[in-house]
Length: 194
Image (cartoon, rainbow, N blue to C red; front, top):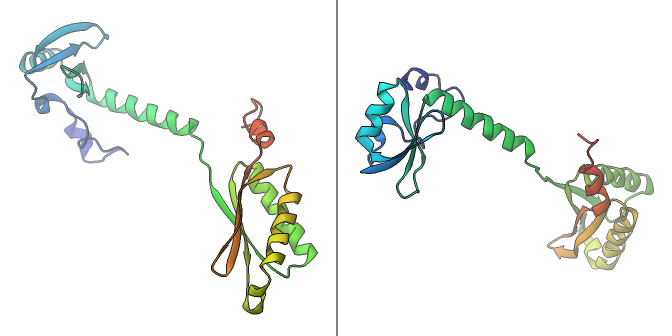
């Protein structure tokens, strides 16, 4: 039955992880029928004959069990259910992105406010942010000015995020890390937000 769909693939890898029909080679297996009823422990040959007599497949659902657990059902239906479960899990999964904003040591006030506005948007969306000050030439002699700029940025964004890693020099750059504040995360988890 499964060979019909293996040509197109249909978005999932059908043959790699799935053990079914003739691939079931354990001496004994615990069998569950198509209505989720326990049929007990039997040899894999007997379970396969039972599945074929009903026009269905024998699929291993728990290979690490003692003995392994097999279910009698249509393999296409099983793979469809697996794909639906994976999609649902992916919808509920929260991904946190890492954003980076780069500043120069001698930045103008207007540019600073625009970049800080972008950082507010990133933090409001629940992303982590790396704020980097780039030093050029003789600016390397003034790391205290870089720390002061990072401190000013952190104060401007205090309502949106908290500093998780203090200012640290890395080559010609000085950077700090920020995460969204608890208030921002609480607003994101509010039931009306989607």
